[in-house]
Length: 207
Image (cartoon, rainbow, N blue to C red):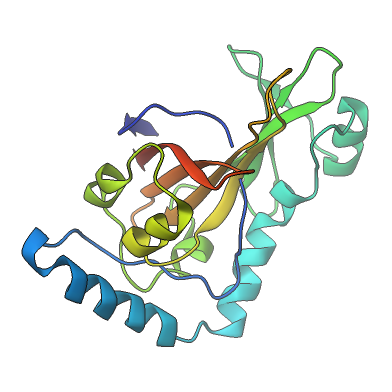
């Protein structure tokens, strides 16, 4: 995968999965209010097939099966697959059944400090949650310090939790990453400070 950074990125997570939808594209500034309202209205009235939601939940099951502060030996018992240590020290685990995985950073205490979803190449289960594609232009519109309700206006929904970290020592910030997926495998990520709900950064990831 090629990672195309849009804004400064930090680790982070979390909101709703079932029934959350995404909008596509940016609009001319003169038409923005009416267009945003129209797309948000479409997203709000679109019904997600229960089977689609169930497939997405199953795809995320491996990621959600571990929690922050969990000891490494317990993580590896739960996941029941060997981890692959990355050059930066993070450990990648893949579910042989679904192909989805989780990238874990362990702290000095050998407990989970952060985790990030490892999608499949196309992630069809997650892309099916979005009736509209998301674009790098939408990610560009996400400004640092933006409140979450403005993120919802730009992206059209709450997104899917794809990363989470515990606070840095001596800091109250806990970062969360929300993702919006496309059928071609690309996806947008917005990182929030979980206590305040304000944007820390964003990126658009391409295959």
